[in-house]
Image 1: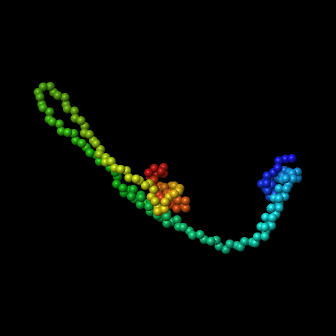
Image 2 (image 1 turned 60 degrees about the vertical axis):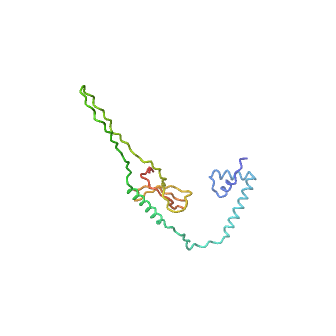
Length: 194
């Protein structure tokens, strides 16, 4: 006696979905094995009952029109994101350059040397001027890298790299689970460095 077949394989045999070699082996096994033969008979009864119930169902009515879903306009948030990005670019370009103040200290005046007759004295070595930079220590402000586009909190999201102004200005946009843009930041190049 060969090994018994599983219920899924017997269903596939019933639907003629097994390869031809397996179809022959299952047919031979069902003639020998009473357990598999009983399970196969039960599967045939179930299939016949389901076919009868499906045949008793009324024909479905044809669909006359599909219900229309409200469409959200993606153009509004795209315009808002583009406006914010353009404002950030203009602010960045008009920002004055930071220059450091340089204070040049003059050397102290030396008293005039007394001239004594006698051997010639070696020339007096003058020290070069000392240049000291005075850099005021300021506390660093907290930098928010992303600009929020709405008042809702961001719990989860995906960061997507987009190109504004025809792809010339790269920016990162945080998309919420609903697909709406939640925050944006500009990046200087495609590597992501600010």
